[in-house]
Length: 398
Ligand code: EPU
Image 1: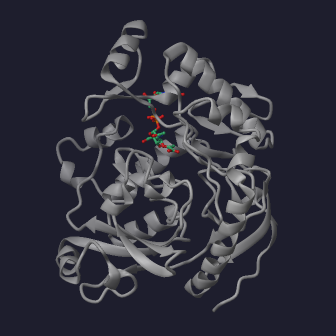
Image 2 (image 1 turned 180 degrees about the vertical axis):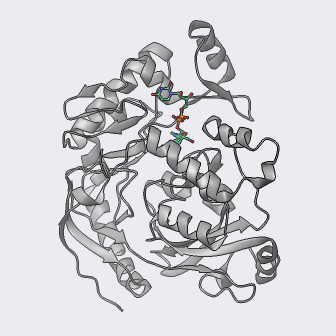
Image 3 (image 1 turned 135 degrees about the vertical axis):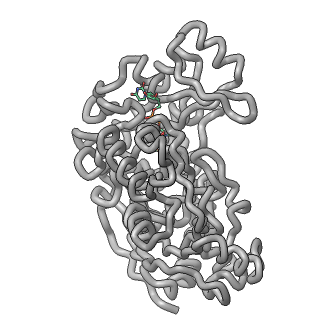
């Protein structure tokens, strides 16, 4: 069994909000041979969590005001092992005593028609012959969890494997993409994921979960929903259709379709990639320059009656009807209307060009972030009778 060498590490440079966080036991995962040792560590720590009741301890700490009073809130994660990818969708506490595993597994390859090797043999969802059929119509690529997401999008594009371009420039790692079902400019990663390979910490095996088994929903999945997950994502298998069609229905991308009105077939995946990069660079702060985790709240989904009542009071309300009759509201617009766009509270604030993005220019910590999140939520609730849900995953202090 390959051994692990846990050591102390401050995670400030490993999370894009730059929150200070002392990890007492930091482990780099860059080899599949380390997985059995992680299982042993997981089992040992799970016992310790059960004995010390971290959930109770956590509910008394600084997030309690936000999370115990409102049943709509998701629980914070109390983990026997904390799995860290690019740290671009996380709110970290000041201290983590339970081990933090930084996934750095690398590799991208096109799966061949026959004998797809790792993981595919045990696929619960698709037989080898299904995969063979699929390979005729799709480029099927296996990407290790520690690859950088944007680099993966760029690499695929340059290989002629199209379909990921609307998701260009999203910060983070490939392994994190299915967790929150990243989405932008009319595409969600769920549409392109064929399966996800996980190491099951309990059974000590690599398992292949079909996209259906991942239970994808808007910014959600089985991985994000689980309050205590026993799965580490080691790779994602994408199926990208060989017959490519641009997705240009999002308002920001319409100009491209309009420019090519007479010859829509001349639009290339590179055109879409470039425009998405331009729009993101214009609208969203670069986490390398202005610390943030992208959208800090989900766009709320409300019953039709609620949206209609609000529309009477606020004729400019941004509201999008959903297939089931409910309406999705633009949280950025709601926050903007409450006067929070570009406004600060201590070291943190809401961004000046996209009010949905919480930024940390002043080097704040998790208390500062949660204090601002609380006030924004209260203001939006008071004005629009909508309780915003925090989008990034919040880890409990352990
Ligand atoms: N709006 C405002 N004021 C603001 C921000 C937005 O009025 O301060 C309005 C915009 O004018 C627009 C509407 O709200 O009419 C929606 O804004 P935008 O197109 O910027 O998208 P969003 O709904 O705020 C979502 C995703 C983003 C993704 C964009 C583009 C969520 C939580 N956010 O934002 O994802 O990049 O669409 O597809 O679904 C992320 O998840 O981290 C993220 C950045």
